[in-house]
View 1 (cartoon, rainbow, N blue to C red):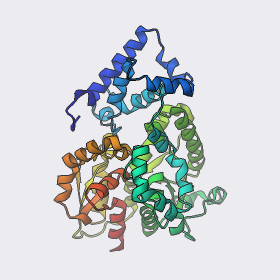
View 2: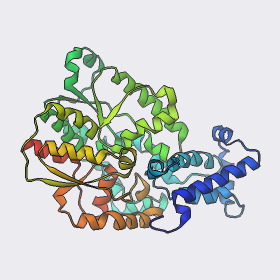
View 3: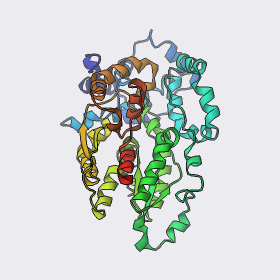
View 4: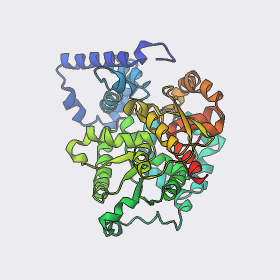
Length: 416
C-alpha cells in the first residue's frame, strides 16, 4: 500500500475482499471449511480452468491479486485492534484457490527449497556455477519468474565445522550427561537460510557460545516449513511441522536451551506450528538469540564501556511479534560495553521470498528505497546490524554490502 497507494493492497482492503469472498461462498451454500479439505481438481481440469480464467469471471481472482501483494510481515496481526491476521488467511486462501487453478512454477521452487538445499550443498561450487551464471539467471527469470537467488555458502557449514566438538549430534550421549551439568550446553537449531546461505554466521554463533564459557551442540538440520506455509501448501506444511515438532520435543526433554538464529523461522515454531498442530505441537521451546542471551548475561560480569556504537535494524516480523526485542538487544550490548541504537523502519521489501519474485521486484526495491535506503546511507557500514536473513540479503542486493548480524558484533566485543 505504501508503494501503490491502492487500498486493495492494504490490510483493510485485503480483509474486505476476503469477507466478501466468504459471503459469496455462503450465498452459494458452500462450506469454506469443507472446501479447504476437498481434493484438488484433476490436472486437466485445472489447466482448463487456468486457460479460461480471463474469460470466465471468478471473484477469487480479485482476492488473489490483492493477497499476492501481501508481504506476510504480520504487522496487521500485531497492530490491528481485532488482530486480523492477513498472512494466515492468505495461506488458507492460496490452499483453496490452487485446488481449482494451476500454481505458478515459482511456488513449487519455494516450497521445495528446504528439502533440496542439503542436496545442493553436497556440491556447492557446482550448484553455484550452474545457478549463478548470467544465462541461467536469465532462464530462471523468464521460465520461473525468480530473480537474484543467493549463492550457497562456500565452504559449507559442514566443512567449516569439520572436526569441531559441536558436530556429531548424539542423543544418547546427551541423555547420559548428568542433569546438573546440562545447563552448560546450548543446542543450536538450524534454519535453511543461515545454514546453507550464510554458514559463516552459524560458525560465529557457535564461537560466541564457546567464548561465553558454554558448550554448543549443532542439532541436525530439519526443515521448518515456513516457505511452504507462505505459499499455501498447508498439507505439506502440516507434515513438515509435525516431523520437526516431534524431533524438537524429543530434544526438549534434555532440559538444554534450544536457540535459533533467524527470527522469522523461530517465530514460526510458536505461531504457525501452534495454529496448524494444536495440542500435537507439544511443549518444546526454541529461543531467539536475544532471549537466550538475556538469561546468559545474568551470570556474566558486565564489561567496561567501550567506544563502540551500533545501529540495529529490526526484522518486520520480529518487531510485530515481539515489540520488546529492541530493548532486549540494547540491554545485551550495554552489558558488553557497547551502545546500540535501534531503528524500526518497517519491511525492507524482501519479506522472505517476496523480493525474489520477478513480478514483485519493482515494489520490493521501492519499499527498500522508501524505508531503509536513506537511513542506511547515514550510518557507517561496520555499525549496521541486521538480525533477519532476508533483510541482510536485501541490504546486500540494493545497498551493495552485507551487514553484520548482532551475534557477529557481540563476538567481536567479547574478543576485545
